[in-house]
Image: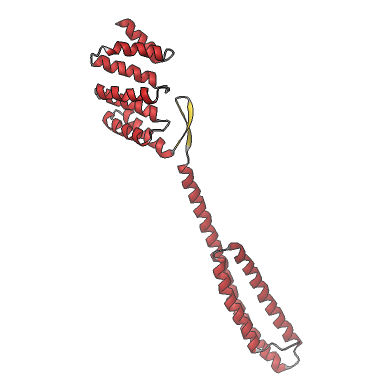
Length: 251
């Protein structure tokens, strides 16, 4: 068996030392390749140590043996350094994996908050965006809280921003009620006419027409009677139509 020279040993150690940082660098970006690099590195280090020990055992020349022992000690130091680098690389991989996992968990949570939600509006199931739902609920909360002026502003902004929303018919209806609650009958009538024009099939349409009649009565407008009659004709099965009949019979 050939003697392992100092030059040959140094070259081997130099190659291992150069090879390791390159693999450590790659491992930070490719977990699978990094794991393979770690396994290969451990295998090569173990092979080097086994080969060196085998050569020491077969040497009969004392001088050569002492020289090999010295080289072995140096190699053991190199191996210790390599093992330390392996531990650092393994720790970097573990930290990278954790950061990636935390990132994707956070991203998934953020995306879920932006996904449309299924809600039931006037008995119908619809898909609405979370922001859209929050805006509508905030506006109607102002109304139920008695802040009719702020409610009117919020509801007006809602229908302008979300004209195609499933909440739009209701928002427009409550906008009219917000004006009526402030005794602004002209604005209330205008708002409820939008409900009849744009959302005639909405369950809020009969109530919108009844509110128009109420505003007309408040303004002493004789058109109130015809509005009630039209309500009964267009929405005969509605609760608003029953109220309209009662009002007509009381005149």
